[in-house]
Image 1 (spheres, rainbow, N blue to C red):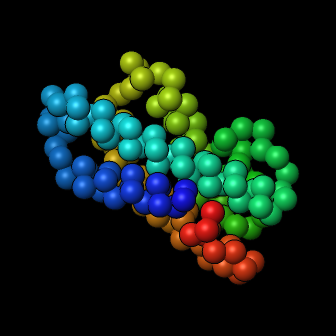
Image 2 (cartoon, helix red, strand yellow):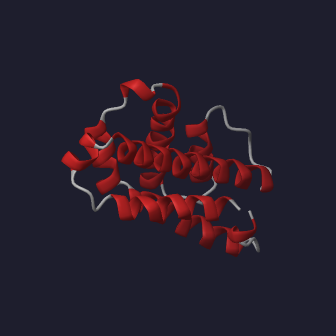
Amino acid sequence: MLIENIMNALNTLVELRKRKYEEIEKDKILASAIIWNLYVMVQGSIDLALKVISLLNLRAPESYSDAFRILGEEGILPEQLVEKLMAMARFRHILAHAYAQIDLKRIYEILHKNLDDIIEYLSYLKEKLRERGIDIAEL
């Protein structure tokens, strides 16, 4: 299930954020583990948004970031969270296609400042889908 994949990556990242930047910078395997789990969490969050859009027969998104905009337009997500998630979706492109250009300082910052955005996203989604009779765990 999507939610399970997102949560597994998120929980791993919560553990890995206990590491100091210098340790991550020196250990390429550790850095790769962080980057991979960020990718899995972000891509899973996008896939979940796309699945919700399809399930609710909403307009087709023009991009990954547009998927979050649609959920905001439908009142499923608050606007301030939509903006954060749209930025996250754009960052996914860097994770997927510009691996050699990834800035570890930016990764470390995301690790410490943005994981709660995913928790908030899942919480809103769970609540709003429940109101529509849909169990997020089944997606």
